[in-house]
Image (tube, rainbow, N blue to C red; front, top):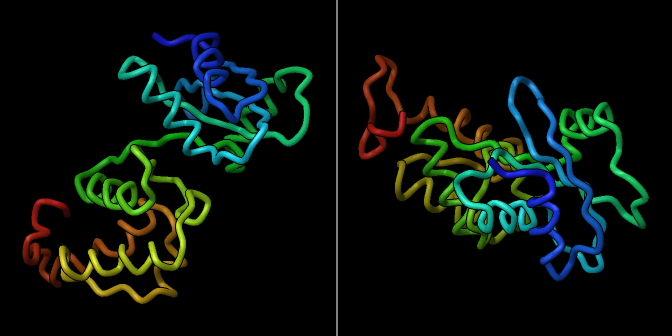
Length: 185
């Protein structure tokens, strides 16, 4: 099992990380490794989280990254860490829970150029732009036979939200799967 100290060491290997304070916490019954970091250059939380998870491998528990501006003097207390996770200030990796979420996460990762996207990661926060949205909408239509308007996509900016949005379109009124999307529903 990965320790907070191992996570801190891996983060400090990253060129953009100046400081890293880490802790293990339990949020909603799940053990998480949380890092609070300050940066020398811009780097988004998802890229840092993937840096940690790629280097620590399969023994790594879910990881969350909270970027703080300025100099860190100490790790925030556990209540502040849990509040950051609950309020979305800390980018915690949540894995796909079904084949549809898995496929959408891979698609988003390809579009965003990152190795791993969690189901609660915001597309725009992860570096997505209008060109990326158009690529995703095109694949949804080609691969799943589902047309999603851009404004509807902008209301479903996480993998989980998009899966919930398109799932009803993947089945007909009697619940039979349509087309090649049968295994995803």
